[in-house]
Amino acid sequence: MGIRFVIEKVLVVDEERTRLIADRLKRLGKEVVSVEKRGEALDRLREETFDLVVSDAKFDLLNEIKVIHPQCLMILTSEQGSAEAAVEAMRAGAFYYLTKPFTFDLLESVLEKAEEHLGLVKENLSFREESALTIHPHLICESLTMKRIVQDLEKIAKSQASVFITGESGTGKEVIAGVIHQLSSRSAAPFVKVNCAAIPETLLESEFFGHERGAFTGAVTRKIGRFELADRGTLLLDEVTEIPLSLQPKLLRGVQEQEFERVGGTRPVKVDVRFLATSNRNMLEAVETKIFREDLYYRLNVVPIHIPPLRERMEDILPLTEYFLGKFCAENHKARKKLTERAKQKLLGYGWPGNVRELGNIVERTVVLDFDETIDAEHLYLGAHTPKSSVEKGTLPVGITLHELEKRMILETIEAQQGNRTKTAAILGISVRTLRNKLHEYGCFATDD
Image (cartoon, rainbow, N blue to C red; front, side, top):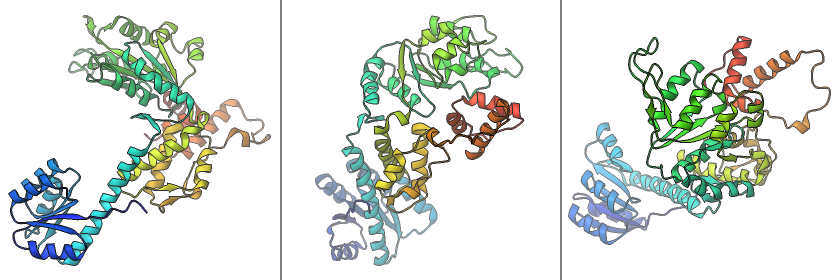
């Protein structure tokens, strides 16, 4: 069960049924203060703290209460029983709307719901306050490796240097980038993100630099690109290694000179942008195999940060799980759930090919399916990932070509992930664009994520 909250002190504001409601609440063991006028109610609210206010439909009073005591709940009563009136009351911030005449049994039922609601609020606030696992408000970690990274973030953020963040898909590269921006002197300016793997190659240049009217078929108006949108702020080039080689020289100029030309334009555009980049590739291999320009890499890689996969920082698994449990229980208005020891051991024994993103998805699924207050091992569906150590000799088909083996692996993985390209690419260790190209090669098409 979640934290039990008992409503102790109630303010009743009602010109007609004040005495009757107050008497009933007193019988339930509540401390009740009764007033008839709005002014009297506001005076008492400024002097004392109440858990609940029961009042006839005074929306101006509701607004005042939200300013004086934001955590105080309010139940409105009215003779207008229309659905529109009830909706208006709830939108204004009322916890419940009672139509007169109402039974006292109904009033008791609403009080129970209010206590349950306040218990959930108190529990989730308590969890956030007591958690000593967070060494930055946006990051949760216990492993020494991640703590060292987080401790360096403030120094990195205060500089203007470009930062290159590497790590497998789902490790939290974008989260780290967001923290750098928030801690920087540019935090009040735009934080613009470009997912380089998700934009078709033919549109990337226009997305980056914008275009002039008439630059190409369909360019009916001028478009401002991401570089200009990020002026005075930060531009995140997510999965930057997916940018085609043909566009990389222009990107290099934009990064190096803080200057570019729109597609179809002839005049240079100057900007003031800080660049952050991420990739799930081995960057030295990407440079050696001519997938990524060496000069562009070193221009972006002034400060390198590598985020290790979740399987290499086991200490973070349970703290992250507890964080996600608190987050998703609160979002779904559910009491805080607890993990059994068997569930914890199952989480610690998994390989986490999708890293932190996969962990969050699994916890959310478990919360949404609304199991008991405790989560046991059988409640955790960890997918069909098989650790490498469990693969036995002789299980690979003999006589099959590498091309056919690759095709089978890709198609079986995407089927297991129900067509989700992002998860499939993460499990296979390839980019979303590479996966998309392979599927086109096979004459198959995956569903959108």
